[in-house]
Amino acid sequence: MANSIRENKLFFYLGLWAGKATKLALKLANKKVPYYPGTIAGKVCPNIKHYLNKPKTIIAVTGTNGKSTTCKMLEDFLSSQGLKVINNNGFNTSPGIIAALMDSVTIFNRQNYDVAILETDELTSKRIFKDLKIDYLIITNLFRDSIEKNGTPEFMASRIKDAIQDNTKLIINGDDALTCTLANDKTVFFGIGDLDTDYKKPYNLMNDLVLCPKCNEPLKYSNIKYSHIGKYSCKCGYSRPTCKYEISEINFKKNYFILNNDKYDLNYNNIPNTYNALGVISLLQEMGYQYETINSKFKDIKILGTRFVSEEKDGKILTSILAKGQNPAAVSQTFETIGKDKNKKDVVLLMDDVTAKKNNTCEVEEWLYDSDFEFLDSKSINKVIIGGVRAKDFYVRMLMTNINPKKILMTYEEKEVVDLIDYEHIKEIVLVHDVFNNDLIKEIKTDIRKRWYE
Image (cartoon, rainbow, N blue to C red; front, side, top):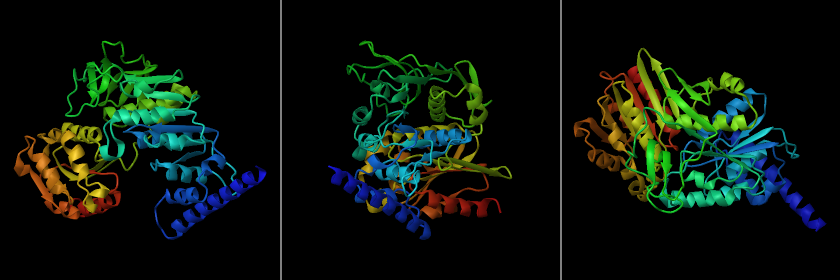
């Protein structure tokens, strides 16, 4: 037994050093593959997480949408309190988790950080949580997402349920009937109360929760924030729980919301990010932080830069928004926000998934027709310009809306979209893009600046 322990320790240090050496090599080669050191370390020592010394507090965040934004908000706040925080920055499967935890220790496995914030893939959460003691787990929501990878929302819920540890405090979105099925006796719920802007019934093309997740009878909704998020009940008795943290008022024009009689400043203008902020505040209060401390820092916390970036020069606005393709709820929310904005604009869709360029056709049929492209039928939108190898698939979907076909332009060459923009008759250009093409968006924005500003 002693020899086995010594052998495991040996392979642990070999894995740790191999991972750190890989990170150094990537840095010298100017290659950005943050998860790859974790891949190498895991191959050398498959149970490396067991031996890595961990930060005192481990916070995990899982769910379909909002994970990265939630983690960044948490990191910004806790860092402002003088804590050393490690974050896996969106690389949410095992290699990314291992890489982050390795970054938190020295070459001799001495822990240097106070808190680990781990964005966690829903399907592999059980494997990720192995050998970790999760103190807090935020579950943001569960939606249909890339069916070929994730299956149904109910399947994702079952995988998360298997991963939840007995001593973990759960912070759950009480307005999502499916996430609430994951609650245990250490759960606190957050939610948004009745608002004047609520819908009386689901209005999106997609509704993942028509039936009660407990008895499969039809769910009844008394209000809807978006998709299936809202106040629900069933004749079997299953209904929205009492939320310990509940927003009673939101004013996007004056940039505040009221939570449990306290007024919080905000710097974003949509409901999904309000839920992200609410989940963060709920967790921070459970950790012992008070309203005054939270709000004094929270108003300065920005939404994750790759998700929403807007700049203005001489009255001209250039905005880029990440819409997370293959995810109808995220895409629909993005389109709804764009459609409601009153600035005269051209909208550029650059939403090809990384797999699209490999001639994978499955993902198109899975989500395009569940997404609400109809929100782009807005008087404020001058043109919709589509770019990428799947431009014609998007074009056909757009033709199924009531949008005037003359307003829809397309090109297979992504960089050619800048030639189709109507620079003279608009105030804003909105670029909608997928997770994997941030570098392309930077190039296109540079080209637009040259044509529009200069």
